[in-house]
Image (tube, rainbow, N blue to C red):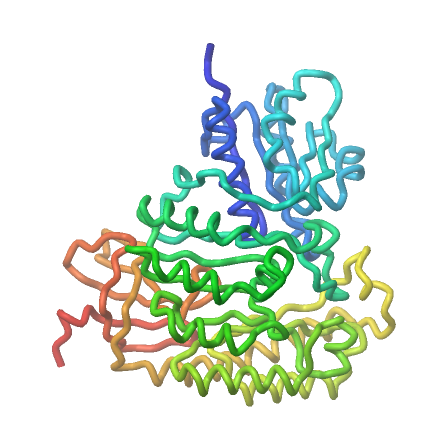
Length: 447
């Protein structure tokens, strides 16, 4: 009997990447062969996103495209992720190409759903969104990289007024420290050099499980893992960014001096309407505290423009804040008018054109800051982890501790020496661009 083959398509954020890898491991242990070739697959699992309108459309387009591939074959399409959790009934009613729906909290039931596909009904399982979160499945066969995302918690208790995630992912459920340490140790043994800690809000890690903000304790334990080179933390909300956490980043040498803090805005009026649990004074105090305690800290933020009620004065405050704070990395997004969120019913909705213009203004402001920051790096030497090699050009593409993969800049350098992906090389910076850098191997540098 031929082994059944299964493929996975992952859309959206890095949290979905982790979930897909967990399902891959479950499928393989269940006797299925995981394949990247959709034409060979008997089952295709689409892990979707629905955080904003563009993400929803991308997910829908992917399902339609798969439906065309499925035509006149026995392939089965299982849709999971946030779009499936949010619109499961509508999807089954409107998209006949879908054969089954799997909720965000039920990914461990992927084989159970597949086994039900032999009948005439289209199975749905979406009731696990509040289950305890425990990710003990070995993902290492599907981590063929030197970098791995590690989800330390699922769900969120913040209830930001623009965000649908608590409805789709449930309340905060933290993983045990020993489980995370065991997973990271396994990943490192498989060749991973850098782990990136993720959750909806990493700064609240442990509050449910340990009744305390336990991220500092987790960092202390991860720092003990031999052969682990870098620990990076994303999604650190400012209101739970404590002095203890600053100290933990400072004292643990494997924890890179890089923090991702989604501030979203600086107008107290807008922050209140967003139901953010912080204010402009505290945000500015945190930035100053980080820079005074860790001089080479790199601070990344994300901003949301065009939120309902955002006036020209509110936006000018935000733009002045960007100029003043001089973030090392910054992304700006236009507010997405999402049904089922509290902000959907707020007055003062901003016109789409104004939102786009405001986003562009913020990014143009940040581009000048980024150029100034990068110019200061010329002639400095940094440890660079190699992410990609263009062999025919002897070109290497990597990152310093200052850059997270996919969202930040890169470092380009050429060398005749045969380095490998995942190696960490000392690079002297020789040129700068808006977001990226060029350099030479320090051992090969000649003035």
